[in-house]
Length: 92
Image (tube, rainbow, N blue to C red; front, top):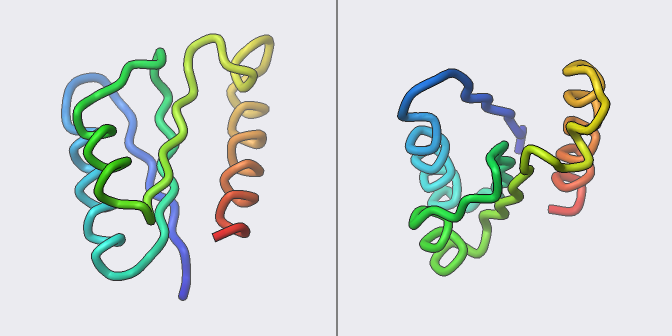
């Protein structure tokens, strides 16, 4: 089975809803899902529900002061993040 990476960016609403909707569909199809969320450590009701009811979905939140962001260019951050996601997916 081939894996895909979806990226949602921009100001305003809808990114979390879109990501969690696609994660729900993938989990329902028997796939394992890894969600990386770049936020300041906020917990949302969607996260609580996914963690409780969808064990095939892993959520990792990266906050503003996380090891990914300190003194790094955006390109370095993307490389580090991509390597971590690839590692997580290899464990699935």
